[in-house]
Length: 60
Image (cartoon, rainbow, N blue to C red):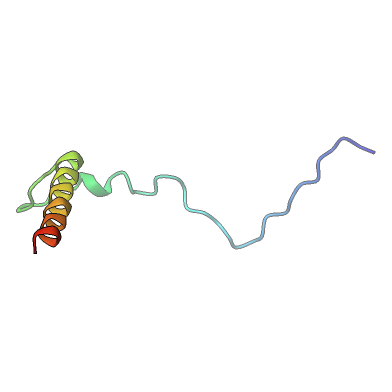
């Protein structure tokens, strides 16, 4: 028995895109007229909105 490992053949035609294929630059584009919010602020307002909806369900 040899200690060589069998190499798996990769199927031809299936290629993954390189990591970070322009996704890092997606949020860097500045557009006029949009309000810039940090993700923490957006999550906070989403959490408050969910609490408000739950409160309405309890009261009404």
